[in-house]
Length: 334
Image (cartoon, rainbow, N blue to C red; front, top):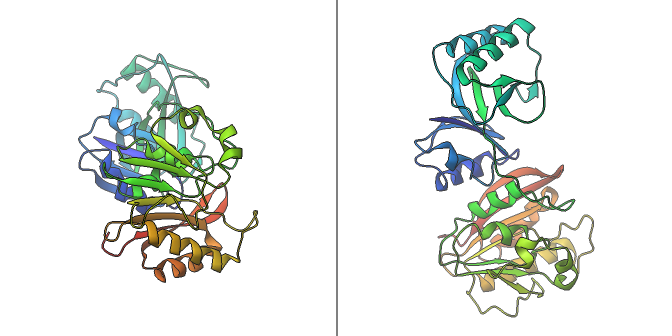
């Protein structure tokens, strides 16, 4: 089965390295910085559970890409003798090429809608609820695809400015979770990473933030009522509750120094943070995923490497429109 998934821009390498934890033997057909087309024997019910995906689709048919109207007519012809499984009584069609919605001639649009109606037994609606079929073209991909968008589980809304569910889940997946992990977020804030880590088995999941008493009031129920998370209100630069080398993995989003006042100048703050992480992380297998403002990425990498922590990869992304960088690393042997 062929699938098409969309995810936060700039995270393509992270997705490619993590998706195999959710579907069986994925084989990449096409990839860019915000989407992936892959083949897998997994059912679509597994694909919809990938937490770092914004939208997922089953690819029904594809044709060589040329004029959009000609391509849509060819896609309509490909349905003429095949049935379609339906998951709703009605449907609508979207045309999304090179990252934006595009117009299609009325005859081509009607031809595709007619063939979908015959193949699925569904009725076409202009808007509203129902199943969505997307005609998709991606830059540098030689085919135009007809896809069925998966109906994905709804998630609780996040507070303004919070890290998205998709990005939180992706950075946790990038830390290579293991069932016997002691997981720590020392700048836990709204709890996005500890909440995402609960999707994987762990020995301990620890939320720590020096501002915990104030933050606790706004926790979503999943965090506030969880018995799987330990809560600490400690300074991330010292972490007194942890013994040396006690933590297996840290995933965190430290203050960026753009909107909040830091206790030290940014380079000194990052160095003190790295010293703290070096003390608590396991000596051979300790892993680290760090999200920082892009302007601080070079200083963060310098601080980590000066404190016995290697940076294996860097990924430039946007977080709520702000330039950011993800640093993935830990011990050199991890």
